[in-house]
Image (tube, rainbow, N blue to C red; front, side):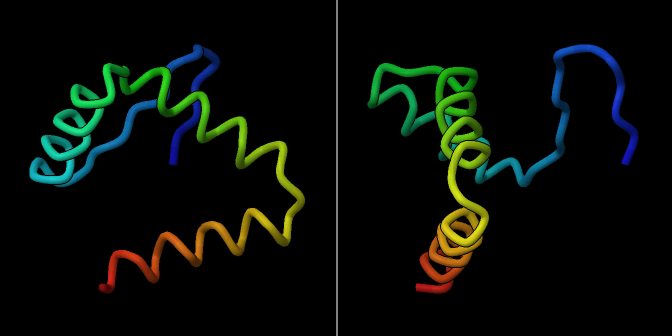
Length: 64
C-alpha cells in the first residue's frame, strides 16, 4: 500500500461500519480524528505483546 509524506491516512471501509462509527462518535461528542489519534497513540505506546492482545480482543468481539 502506498504511503505518502503528508499527515493524511486514507482507507476504505464498509459504508455500514463507517456510519456506525460516526453515529457512536456523535453520541460520545467526539470526532473520528480524535478517536483515531487516541487509539493510535495507545497502540504505538503499548508493549508489542499488549498491542497484539488488544488487536485479538477486538477481533474476537467482532465474532460475537
